[in-house]
Length: 265
Ligand code: KIV
Ligand code: NA
Image: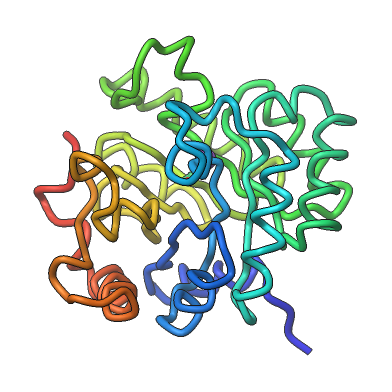
């Protein structure tokens, strides 16, 4: 029997079909996303901001991630589900393995996502050796917001773009099955996606990616102030949540989203 897996998404890249991804935090949304044809559900630690009401993702606990991942899995059918390793749960291999174990064994995730390159490459390698499917995450790393001093575009300029490409290659080499690129110039995302065989899923990274991901609450216009500039309110255009989710999938697959107005230079 075929299992939901991150590996199945590589076939979409191979045939040039964009991977439509959304964040999910509960069973009802997960079930609607499954019906709408969303290829991958991400239990993002963005739940700290959009569900729990924190200002950043830093306060999100592993317990909260396990709780929401289990809820999502009760609605997600045969769709692959990945869950974020929250802030400070992957600093060394033993800690990362413990956290990934909880997300997969208690939460039922099919894999985990973790932010960063550099020292994170070794962690990805160890998770991979132990059989944990991994989604890497480069560009804007929201868990580091207190170091960055704000949320802003990453990988601008030739040197930064090259450094990002090198980290992406190292993460693929270490065994990552997927890569999320957040808030990077479209040109940088395109270079990375062409250099890697694993799918590169963009958010605020322009159209030249192997797939797209949005925080579902942004895509439904729920976020106060309208959400980030790279998002679109799919609910306003369609009038119902199931129709909005289906339109998101259609727009990503057709290359209609993101458009030039959602793309950072
Ligand atoms: O937590 C999250 O929602 C994420 C996506 C925006 C990629 O990491
Ligand atoms: Na996240």
